[in-house]
Image (cartoon, helix red, strand yellow):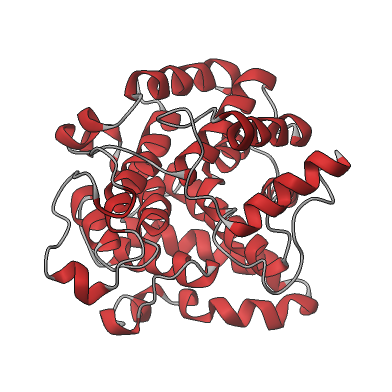
Length: 317
C-alpha cells in the first residue's frame, strides 16, 4: 500500500543528497563533470548520500507531526532548536549548511519563545529556507482535507516560522496546491502542476493587495509556455522564486524521477535545495519505487527516515 510520506520525504532527501556535493558551483563548472548519480565529497567533503539542512528541517517538521499529530508551531520550533544546538535530525550529529534567515529565526525563537514573531519579514527574507522544508505540512493538510483557506493559513504559518515575507509564503502555498493536485488530481504531471498552480493563484488573486507580489511568479501561470523557456533563462539561486521556478521547470521538461532530479541539480548554484524541492513533487507523482535503488541505498540514516514516514502515516493517515 502506498505511503505518501515515504514518497515525498524520500524525494526531498534524495534530491538534497544528489545536489549536496555540487552546491554553490555554477552551471558551467558542473557541466565539465555533471552529476549522474549519488556521489560524495565536493562542497562539504562528505560521503555519498549525505544530506543537508533541507532534509534536516524537513525531518524535524515530520517528527513533530509524528509526535503531536498536528502542526504545533512551538513543538516544531523546539525541534528546529534541537537541530541547531544539538545536531538532532542530521546525518552526523552536527548542523551544517545553515541558512542565514533560518539561523536568525531560531535564535529569535530562543529569546522570545513566540513562533509568530521569530521569522523575518523583510525583503531580505525571501530565501528558499521555508519552501525547502514545507512538504510535511503540505501532506498533513492534504490528508486532513482541510478547506483551501485553512490549509493555506496552516502552510503559511509553518513557513513563516523562519521566512515570514509574503513572497516566501506564496511559494509555500503554491507548493501545497501542487502537491494536492498531484495526489488527488488526474492527468500528466504537468497537467496536475498546472491545476495546482491555477488554484493557488486563484486563492491569492481574490485579494488585490497580493497583486504586486504575485507578479514575481508570473512565469508559472502558464506551464506550457514556461516549459519552452531555455535553460539559460532559468535561475537556480537561493532566492525563493528562482528555486521554485527551477524545480518546476525541471519537472515539466522531463519524464521520470531520475531525469527530473538530475536536470535540477545540474542547473548549479543552490543545487541541494532545488533538488529537494523538485524531489518532493517528483516523489509524490512517480512514487518511492521510481527513485533509483542505488541512490536510496546510499542515503545516510535511511532506515530511520523510513521509520519516521511509517510513524507519520500512523499518526495522521
